[in-house]
Image 1 (tube, rainbow, N blue to C red):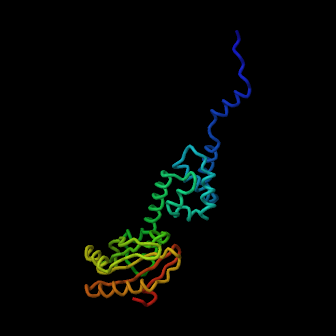
Image 2 (cartoon, rainbow, N blue to C red):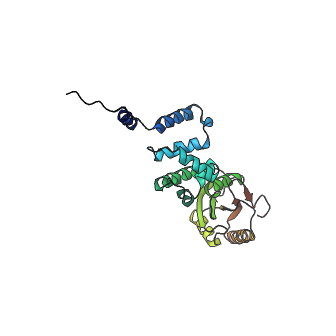
Length: 241
């Protein structure tokens, strides 16, 4: 008896099932495009590749486009709050962990000048580090850069974390940190989540209190920087210190 012939539709279905997913070829072409001409990739295409590192067996194009549509740009997608990202269908715990890694890498790149202990000659070095670390955050954080007697940066540490519009910081916390590192001076920095770096009255009062307490211990307050994502305010440049 001769073997039964397979139905053409069944044969086509089996072939389709055994064929590699269409997005694998698409992803490979994107990688080649990235290596040949990175700037030619759209924001959502870069996101596709990022998402594909965590979701290698999924077509990540729809999720990439949804993220850009919801948050507005590649930068805003990367810097979005974890809870906002996880509210997007398809963005789960594994991606949230990968995003935390990306944000930390970018923050440390922005802090490179501080971490390399360069000499502080103006507000820009610490402002750049502060913008990278806290400029995009939805809540206020207060950080301190510590310098030696030659204004070489010794340490860069967080003192406090607060709410959308305030951080509770006490002068003794800042001074204790300076004494711990045997610092000669301090540079204060905190963020304004609202996008306006203009200091509040509370910022002015806190700076005066810290400055008075520092002078009693022979410490210098070199500057207080208020940062947002793309700008900063320097107390020293404004003549407040």
